[in-house]
Length: 470
Image (tube, rainbow, N blue to C red; front, side, top):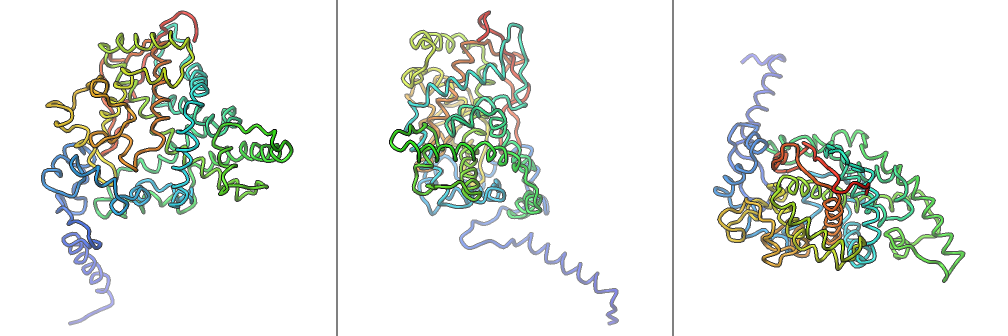
């Protein structure tokens, strides 16, 4: 056989092709992994089905494959550390650790959870008045006077800004007065999400390939959220320095502000005498992790709930009357007890959260199978039952095996009580002051990207209920 130099490239490509075909037919799996589902189409596999119609695709998987955690098993998965790990589950699809290094540190994440529980949830009654004050500032700024019907395009991030303001107030009272900080908080997750907009096409070739593709710009130095970190640093440094100085000068006469910055300064793990660059970076990263876990999801659910309300005129009067009654009782100043009395609104929100439309998550918790199971929600589980929670004594913040909006068990979101109260307070004020409608007068369809659902982007029409400006 005449084996010339020119035949080498051809020979190499033949070997690569043979190996590639073998790899597709016999993909290598790590120890204890379940078997892979045979590809429907070579190389791209089930990608098109997953992207175009994820709901029906997972229904088919549910019938043929037993490795997706559905209604029967999901709550068990969330109970045990050996079957559920938040950092591992989100590392590939939400690689925030590429720009916030501490996001990949289990100890930091434990501190975040502890901070939310002790610094926010445990002190929720003390934040209620401030929260509604900040929300009213946002409502006037983002919606304002609607003497004539006004179309608010929700895709512009209005409700992210609305939610960001009270969150900023709880993180640090001084920085919440800076409009560029509010904007930074509202835009932070949205800007980072720009690298996540690529559908997980490459995951069907190999799970790690998609991660490599979407993080390529980050590994070459592109940082879509760097400007927001710089904004926070600029305003946070003088606040930290002033508080440390006041503590030293005033001693026992120092009156500590009620916010997360003060909580951290009083924590031995974050105690300092001097605000160095490293210390400032550490505090900023910590605060932005809280922002990621609070503003983005809360604003999505608020927006979706407003669409659910605006598209169902049969509910308007009933829920409005409840808000009027509570407003008269509290004389416009809500307390935690008054928020608890919003039982119809709470039940409505629970149903809105359940019907949000997200089919699954990276750990393949089959949310649609949980939230639409016939045992819990009757023969037509996809129907919208606004008072299901009210009739069954289920609060919107209560987790159970049939309701995974906030996770489950010890993995449940520690900030869910604040998030629900914030959404209820915001909707209470909006419903009191505005007629809210969809442009079509009907229920608008949510937008789906694979298994992920987003609120509609058609906009909402607001019109004053009263002649005077709120």
